[in-house]
Amino acid sequence: MSPSTNRQLFGEERMKREKVQTIIIGGGQAGLSVGYHLKRRGAEFLILEAHDRIGDSWRQRWDSLRLFTPAQFDALPGLPFPADRNAFPSKDQMADYLEAYARHFDLPVVTGARVDRLSKPGDHFLLSVGDEEFEAQHVVVAMADFQRPRLPEFAGQLGSGIVQLHSTEYKNPAQLADGDVLVVGVGNSGSELALEFVRAGHRTWLSGAPSGELPFRIDGTAARLFLRRLVFRVLFHRILTLETPMGRRAGPRMRSHAAPLIRTKLKDLAQAGVIRVPRTRGVRDGLPLLDDGQVLQVSNVVWCTGYERGFSWIDLPVFDERGMPMHRRGVAVAVPGLSFVGLQFLYAMSSSMVHGVERDADYIAERIVSASSSGTATRSRPQGSSTHPASTPASSDWELTA
Ligand SMILES: Cc1cc2nc3c(=O)[nH]c(=O)nc-3n(C[C@H](O)[C@H](O)[C@H](O)COP(=O)(O)OP(=O)(O)OC[C@H]3O[C@@H](n4cnc5c(N)ncnc54)[C@H](O)[C@@H]3O)c2cc1C
Image 1 (tube, protein in one colour):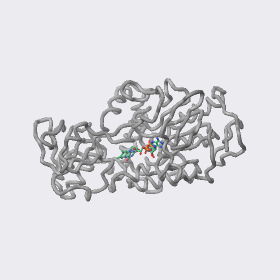
Image 2 (cartoon, helix red, strand yellow):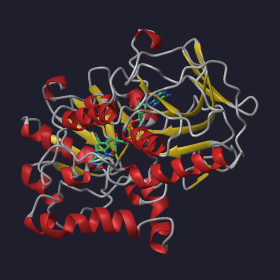
Image 3 (cartoon, helix red, strand yellow):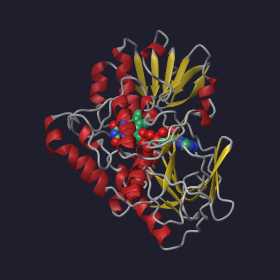
Image 4 (tube, protein in one colour):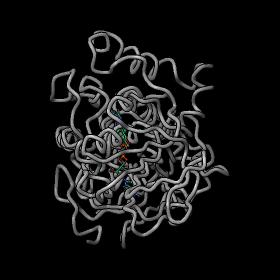
């Protein structure tokens, strides 16, 4: 389906437009939060979302996924999550909430609009979406680092008889072949999926070392009473930030390692019968080879080895030698007008989480609006009279062009 065949603009029929003051790329929680904060400041903006429906990045995750954050920490600004505050929403409830959020605030989202290329040939950004182009003064790349599956290079050497899936492709146990499963990676995804496989009757091996675990039950009474708030809102949101020595020490590690286990405990895995094994370091005779020299005769390998940012479509000098965007609190260092929201530890441990993204979004929205009103922005001349009802331009210089 071409990007332009499945577009839906919340609030009105989509008009042809070329120049928009601010374009937000990504209509997940990060993009919608930026949209909320720009709208309340009266700025003009448009959100471009690659998927056909808002919330699809959640919908496409595996069937049994429940958030590890309870509903009280799953709301974006201005709209409570419609569930008991202690309930752990399903991924589809989260997806539906995001869709409802965009409708509730009448945010201008174009779905089915994947930005294929972002460049800045002159004063303005140029965004290619299929055969259409958008021009913008400010661009916010609003998405988590979890856009593409990351697999070790040796994955391709596994025998063709082995079913292999990355966690992004996994939906339910029906995808697995009979027999043993090796789960590679002991993050939250790997540990939850290992439990699911062993409960579905597969002998399950879990390979790797965890980055630690929360020292309490996330659904226990103490957690409900105060520990959850202490961890999510105090530790992750206030203490582990770029403003604190502790946060500055933790940041690089958080960006390059799996997060600590939040819901699953190592003892749950042991009790359920999941067999912990060392890291998977390669392939021998088509079978996975572990660090201790063991070769596992498994029928399935599920890679819970993390994600890539997948920013190859950003054609701007904004990445360091490791491919990480260079920014200060989300504001790109070398490309004026470009910002990021949603990245892991962008500002705090909570930056890529539902409850934490809002502060970063607010900060970026404020920067955009003050840059525009201080006149540092280069303004495009209005060429038409159409305005977008969902976004009142901060300045009449910023009309959408028809
Ligand atoms: C398995 C899993 C479980 C998680 N559970 C929790 C949890 O319980 N609680 C919590 O707080 N956090 C959780 N997170 C972390 C985080 O909340 C989610 O990853 C969330 O989806 C991040 O939202 P986002 O808007 O930053 O990015 P995304 O959800 O990735 O949204 C980005 C959007 O950008 C779009 N996009 C990408 N590229 C383009 C492009 N070139 N052009 C146009 N659009 C584009 C995508 O289609 C996508 O819709 C979890 C993450 C994972 C992976």
